[in-house]
Length: 575
Ligand code: ADP
Ligand code: MG
Image (cartoon, rainbow, N blue to C red; front, top):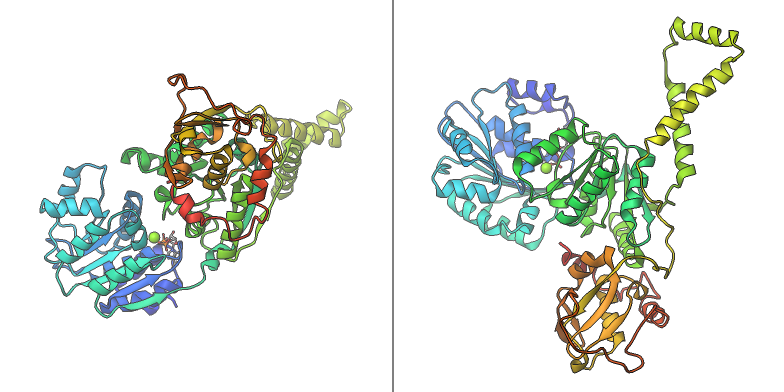
């Protein structure tokens, strides 16, 4: 269905046309007519399917000359970026409609400026729930004339703890308003809101998570523990994307990885929720204009970010749930363009989790070997050949004159071309950033990796044995028994040697943890403070890891079996 089949005003059709939209997406075709009629709608559709226009076009259309004083449409979004982005898009729809004044309000930005904008008669207000509540309390945002409330990414807003704010806003606005809700998933909390605050809503569900995902080629690499950063550098150097996103599960990881990549010469920048608004905007702009080639992000910061033409997405960390995987890889391959998604995994547990994602998304995720230097060289050769072959225009006369000059010196065409190509190839290869070559995944060889000690506040007094400790650690982290080193059991605590590179992850995934029914706290071992001596009985001391592989293996023979704890539960802890 074409936009001009809708009964839209001339001004809107022109704006939509200028944006290059012609056909409506499915969610648009189904929801826009209903929204124009004033119906309440619950819409479910995947990321990248044009939901902003689905609610933004009817919102802009609903504004008339009388809406000069106060907000007629309120749109709630989970993050500042989404609020800004939706506001920008709505302004584009309103380009030829003078009466529309759209204004975005979100935390981390000047209150005064937002108040000014609101006072100037903003009639479409787009904001994050917290800041919207702030303005309502200060009476700088009045809801008396509100006709439409739209919740964009409602599920995400609930995930982020905005439920109270949302309910209090919905309870505050005029009873006869139109309430519209878009959400990727429909958990019971959303249905509850729907029932409580909507009138006879029409449910629209555009199925096929696959639709966007289908177009994306998906691969994974198995990487030795602690070598993910090297592997990522290698892949970035091999594929040289103009524009790539890298997803991490924690803000800290975003910072660390961004620093690492920048140090190695990649044009990388990070984005996450702890950054100042100005900084985030700068990062987004530099990514959009390709100054930044690699954007490292957390899920929340990246949610809904719409930058077109992203070549590839990397999952540096496995996503925390299946939906996130779809959201992440949905960043690439938008609007019918093929994209690529690469996931780095370490260890069998993650392999299991990835298979789970593949089942859920009904996608083929294919394993690839990490490219080595000779493989990268081959790729560069191929790229240069392609580029030369694709250069359409005949070279200028000057080029041929030079060839003749060279021929006179006894250098024939073939030799001349080879010399040029060679210098080009070495230039490309010398631009490869410095990094250590990742070693292939080897079972059980962790020798040489830097280690630290963790401290568990449980010891001999609770009658624990090393196997209990190790079992609990393997279970909580999904790591292999061989990844853990020496275990020393003292009277009231125990220390375990762990790879330094996994320290953060181990701490995240073991708090809280229980051993033998006792809650246990895990921290960094500072050492020295205790005069206690570790237990000396045989069987309580472990060194080198000779005995333990048995233990690890026993629990994990069936890697795709169901005895493994639910991934979501486990991963949640890492957030
Ligand atoms: P969602 O909110 O569903 O994730 P967005 O609203 O961010 O999706 O839209 C994704 C992209 O698709 C945007 O760049 C938007 O401009 C574009 N888009 C939306 N509707 C259409 C359409 N009918 N035709 C072409 N492009 C569209
Ligand atoms: Mg959206």
